[in-house]
Length: 361
Image (tube, rainbow, N blue to C red; front, side, top):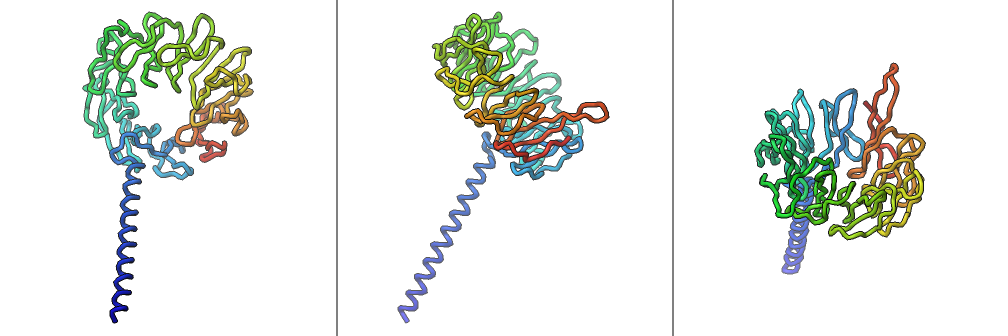
């Protein structure tokens, strides 16, 4: 009898241990899901992609299934877990379920980055958080996305461009350039921002200190710890302290991505170099763009396609326009003629070049 009770006790104990384990895994899984889906995580990655169907925008998942019905007037990529959309002629933000989470009377809005988004209200730009509350009051003529805790803005009276911190305070330094000019690629990367004054380019750090003197007639932002700069009539690359890493020798050069950078040295065609300045993909393309997610757009015989880091085409050149890969997919555009008018159709391909979403409009 005692033996039977002992056996029953052992069975019950094993069952309780198993049940506790299952409960722990379930709770842990929930925590993991929350981390991935970003409930409260401003760096959330949402793998949804805007598509146009019969003139209205919705979203598909990475398998090409519609998850947010096409009912929007415009739609953009998700960033920091939210996407900016236009609905009923107003700009709003939605979450991954398609629910409107911020819907104020903003005249314009930008995508979230660093947990903040630039919005325009009554003709002035400021920044809101994910609750829709202003954290930097609207007092700028222009406002660009935050990166590395800094944002590039223009004063309301048009008199100056400047960088602000996360609280909206101006970044100032003793040796910061006196009068910054506007540039398109003004975000911080690798702890440096490209700046321009009197048509000369240099770089500052997050505190506003001039780290690389403004002495270049042309320059690009840092990427993969290197930046392309033009010296006389040739391009080379410098490190974050301004030291030459690749000597000026290229007719044209672009930003590094995945350890490779587009360049042109001895011909009218582009190839890709490594960080030693050696061509690892020969000069052979009419146009190119930097690598992202191990794929780079290349232009061949009037059409675009993508290559991998070995230089192999993932599909025949057949697209009229392409966008960089993000979260495993790239949006591609096909031009079609309808009643003597050209219409754009948008689709998505994966890294193998297969359609996940055939072009639609």
